[in-house]
Image (spheres, rainbow, N blue to C red):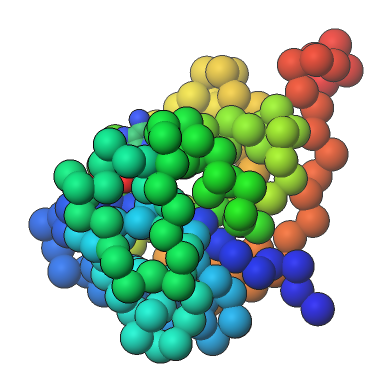
Amino acid sequence: MSLVKYICVYCGSSNGRLEAYGDAGAVLAQALVKHNIGLVYGGASIGVMGKVADEVLALGGEVIGVIPKALAHKEVAHHHLTQLHVTDTMHERKMLMAELSDGFIALPGGIGTFEELFEIWTWAQLGFHHKPCGILNVAGYYDALIQFLDHVLAEQFVKQGTRDLLMVELDPYILLDRFINYQAPPIKTWLNKAEI
Ligand code: AMP
């Protein structure tokens, strides 16, 4: 039986330029519900965030929102979720989202999405968690970032093992299959860098 019960989705509080971004959120939502996986996300009703949550709810799935009180109004907290946690701070929000989730997926989004993705990937690199992390590269949105990450690898500021912790797929069903079958590699952290 799969150990993946909840997946955290990081994505834009805006819709972005293309309808494809929101549409991809809806397809990811369908894939989650099909696998009986609950959604954990930032709790907003707007942008790609709102699209993913609305589609999971429309299909009868479970949605847990986590929003800091300072943003509950600004980001228009979604009031029809299965559960909405309102935290005191942004750090508590991200920590709770991480604790509740068995894996992390980024859809297209802005700097908030990047910050969340990079933090959770960094935590995987350090062995603070052993959960899968991935990007859904919708309409080539993340092509330039992936190219830059190859540059970072070539310039030896990141190791191949760390780069490999971040999966990149176009199809949410393929990404979810990889998550469900994921076996975390042994992590060599900066603590035992001498062995790397
Ligand atoms: P964005 O991708 O910028 O539209 O933001 C997506 C989500 O990330 C929103 O729920 C933002 O509240 C959140 N966010 C923005 N800045 C940060 C940050 N520094 N740390 C964590 N989350 C953030």
